[in-house]
Image (tube, rainbow, N blue to C red; front, top):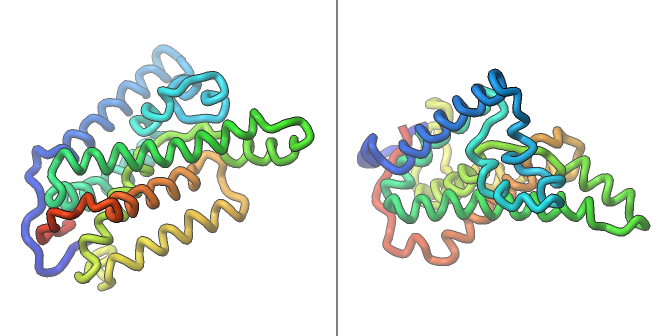
Length: 227
């Protein structure tokens, strides 16, 4: 994905690059724990309704550093490479991390609160509670929620430019945010895989837009590119 008429993104040694490296290290540790120690990491580190019920509030933070498999990890790493570096080049490392971690936490709070409701509703609403537990109870992992916030800001920064989607299709980025928002809402309505955190993704997208509305881009974007 490339933005026309732009300058070089952030240098290789940036916060987004260190974040990517950290995700790889966490995934390696995750696999060692699974294979050699046979410990259920997801019972304590993934985000789940049961974890919220048990008071595992740290899951709101830790879930983003683990992934369900190498393909899941690779997709998020590619997203951070193409979106994270140019957004960081515009915002600076501190505001970029504020955006990424804020979006991750917002999505986790939204997903975790709804999942927790599935355990707290009265017996008279058991059918609703069961639906919430099954649909939003998880466990879920992955850095895509924070990436959704980064994606929202990327679309805003480049709203007047054209990018080549998949290096082929010229398109303005801002409509892609609405497409992503529509997909997240759609899969909240129709049955979907409970291990895909569509509600958390929705929270991440909205957090990215809130980041923009609260004036966090007030210093003005530089020309950026995703390549």
